[in-house]
Structures are given as structure tokens and as C-alpha cells.
Length: 186
Image (cartoon, rainbow, N blue to C red; front, side, top):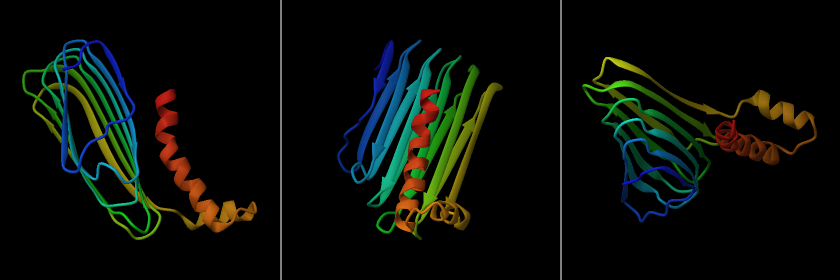
């Protein structure tokens, strides 16, 4: 149970771990984490009462397989939720992310925004399941999911500047993962 303003920058969970945060009235949670090979099968739940603020930013460089479920249960009114997930897969890991946004009945003036983005460096798959279940009338809710590969144009441009192809891929990957942290700072 969280009250006031809370900032968490690292969560250590065991395999198949579950963590639940309950945001009490007027609580804020800024959650920012970066995973590479830990926490590879987890469920993270956030329950929000009234007038809460959630800013949830997760970056994953998949060096192993991941099965992730993110749940945001909005149980009250006047809540703001932003969920940003960035995933990169290379030769060794694949990722499945199920993100569930549930806005309960008889709540008002809630805002929910979810953005799931994936970048495949090789042919390791990324699967997103964005579920948005809205049972309220006055809500602003949207979500999107995008998965892409590095384009030949991006690589060509960097190589034309004298950057080795391996370093060019690393620059693109690092920029993609760091973009979420730059957006948070704005």
C-alpha cells in the first residue's frame, strides 16, 4: 500500500514472481526499471483508488525469454496512468508482454495511456497483448503496440558516416531503449 509520492527504479523479483502495488487516494508512483536477463516470468499489478498518478516505464533488452503480465486496475476516479514499455530482442531472447488496463464501472474522469514498442535486432519474436477493458463512461483511454526491425535505411545512413555495422546496430538499440527515459525527463 503506497501513500504520497513514490519513486522506484529497480524491482528484484524471483522467477515467476508477483508484485502488487496498491495506490491509496492521492498517491503517485513513478516506476522505472531496466531488465536484461532477470525477472523473466513475472506479473506486476497496480491497483489505483482515487486521484492517483502512475508513470510506469519498463525497458527490456531480452537476453533470455520473458513472459510478462502488467495489470493496471483503476478502481476509483480522477486517476492518470501512463504505461510505457520498450523491448529489444536479439539472438537469444524472445518476449511476450500482456498488458491489461482495467477501468472499473462507476468511475469518472480517468486517463489511461499505454504504449508498447518492440525492436527486433534479429528474428527473435516479440508478442504484445494490449488489453484495454473500459467499463466506465467518462474516460480518456488509448493504447498502441508497435513492433519493428532495424531498417536498411537506418543502417545505411550510419554506415555512410563511417560507423561499423555492428556499432550502428548498437547505437540504434541503445537509442530505442533510452528514448523512454528521455521522454520521462520531459
